[in-house]
Amino acid sequence: MITINIDPVAFTIGPFEVRWYGIMVTLAVLTVILWTLREVKRGANLPYETVLNAAIIGIPSGIVFSRLLHVVDRWDYFSQNLGQIPGAAGLTIYGAVLGAAFGIWIYSKVSHFEFGYLADVVTPGIILAQAIGRIGCTLNGCCYGIGTSLPWAVTYTHPNSLAPLGVAVHPTQLYEIVYNLIVFAVLLKLRGRLKPDGSLFLVYLGLYSLWRVVISFLREGTPFLFGIHQAQFIGIIVIAIAVFLLAYRTQWVKPEDTNSPKK
Image (cartoon, rainbow, N blue to C red; front, top):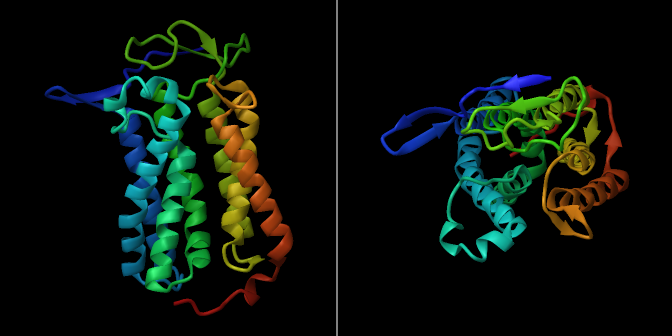
């Protein structure tokens, strides 16, 4: 078994703790932005101003929605501790992705650029950023799995860890890092081969949602509805929508046939 005794707190500034989790989440956000700017430099037909404005809108909307889903998921606790609802100690990746997408979609309607095109450009960067974010989860001890006796189980021993100390659990964070990198490679292979715009983003949503439905059976969590976790419930809905839209509207095309002007 693997023992993790790393202090999740990277450093302190006065009374404030800066955890590796927060550092990795920050790096993940920067990864999405830098990936998108890189794609613009490589020829994606998007103004830099549009990308930066989308980031300014998408980041806070993602944080707010992410926190909202966490509060709903743990309402039994927050209903008794209303003063703790504002905060960033508990965030959900679904909330971050869907909240950011919703905010940017609204921005696209106001600024009149094609949301699907931007979403496809950003998509590989999103899953790559999620892999980086899960490194933070691994160090933080959050999002841990259920107990197991498998030889690759992990045991957290540092008192600042959020995982139960001294208990061998599935390294679900590491599982997800590997899966996300595989999906990243798949998305790179599919770029330019699917039409209309937005199809690659739908593939990402479907693949990641499928993962969350399956991996949640190995993760600790609170039943949300029908005995399943909130992530599973949302995942089933997202899979249904993504599969329907992909089957209804998506076509396979040759990469050289995908060039089209975007505003």
